[in-house]
Image (cartoon, rainbow, N blue to C red):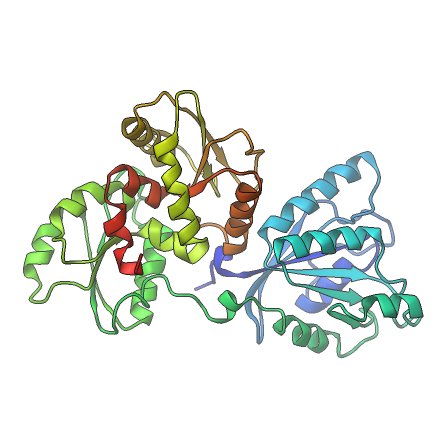
Length: 396
């Protein structure tokens, strides 16, 4: 089975036109996935390539357009390039023997701000040695000097430098739920089969949670909410944890005794993909919403909205019922991040289709704009008055 794109290390490749970005990517992947040309601006849109990069593991490379493309079309390409930054875990900056210019310096400042580790690849060192002033400039930065055309050790040098930059949460393979209960524990997963469930399948977070529990040597029972009571009665020993789809939270909480831990898939993913404490703090803003306040419901993927859609119908109804206020609610889907400064609250989806770096970047942008941010499961359990119980398993 292929590793999910959202669980791969996202590596962005940046630099000026003709610095050798695409040539480097072709060499690393051993495939001609990016067009190479002496004509500036050959790479237009972002080119993505997923692969197994040993010993790093599953990665996705994102090859971007040149930062110094000053044409009218080039400005749009550069804008797409900069939008990629919020999605990446590691950045690779490609330059030549002249060293880094103002373009690269602006990128580095952005990476430092977002705490994104980066590697500078100095290309074309077969043509000319790195200038002394450029060498001095790069001395304190993570960099390798190479030639995409002639350096036979390029791939090894690149991998060696990349491994040193791997984020801790990637190296340590964070758990979804397996670290919350003892090994060989029984866990019940409540999965409603409703209009949003894809025909013949269950949704991604549920699949990932089941696999995580299997990897943790736990015993999983999967039931619908209508069979939950019978499942509990059938067990000789109470389960260590019950995990429910957020939409059935209220019904499930009334069935599961208070002495059994209960949480939701979305809350588990708030911890896996984002910052659980920040999302819990953000939910408190629901209490302060007033008439006319704008709330942004943010989805990281696009999907066909159904009649009783969780983000467009169920959560807005819960918010209005909880607050008793006439709220203005907007929905936004996709990787791009809208201007959020006028919103009083952001509610993010479970982020099953995006990576942790993108969610953390969105949290950072929200914080910088002074806008509280939470996620689906936490907002739902807050509105239902069961958030403290849903967080107890985490020690909150």
